[in-house]
Length: 327
Figure 1 (cartoon, rainbow, N blue to C red):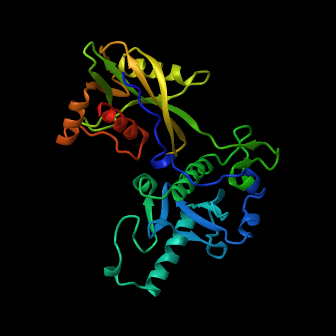
Figure 2: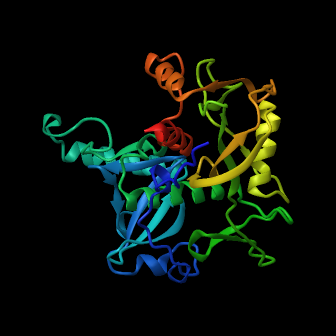
Figure 3: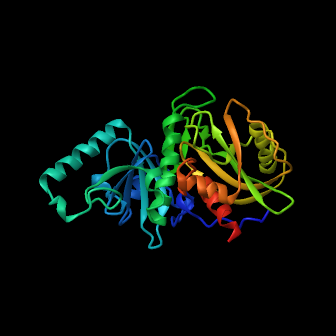
């Protein structure tokens, strides 16, 4: 197969945030960081981020919600510190009430500004997955980190050692058992996602796509799966392709990565070469698999008989790179 170039950072892989653990402070409420001149806060709630006028909506220390978990996210190129606040439901209600009051007090003529999308004038909650290709590099880096770490905080409130409640420390990047002092860190689950290609004797390439049991019958994507303990990334590629599609593949090659904070994955993109076109969908996770030439896939997508991921995900980015491979 023609090798694919390394993917340029796109969608959730972009970031202009300068992370620095030495600047995070040691406390859980980040009072040290809030006291710095110009510090700004950004807000998230269950995978949604607050946006206004094409950017993340920011608050200062005086307007920061009283509830929620605070995470030091880093600085921008000018040295401004950013704190992310992952809101609980009470904090979301507090923010929504304040925003509603502001809108009532400072009502705008809605004809003067856009009413939908990230450029809406009034602060609006939007799903990070739906705006990942539109936000700038700084904002997407801030939002992706906040959503990922916020998800971890919500689901890891107690020590796995003894069940004791833990508290945020070190700028929100650690949870600590206050009784034993044991520290617990955010988890990231590595997952491989691969473009498996078979090249016939004439040089024609075909890409293997699978339909997940939870999807509509016309939706297809690259095969993917989590890396198991004690396993290399390359071994995970070969194992997952065999388990899900019954296809032997060789020569896995890395093409790029992307965080996927829904809730805690790091997607690691690969290509691999199939040794034959014999397939066997596992019937559990994958209900059917299909081979596509570039022309076939492009035609079916255009006809809307097959749906594939968009470029918000690394799957869509790899697909686009492969489709462009004959140009």
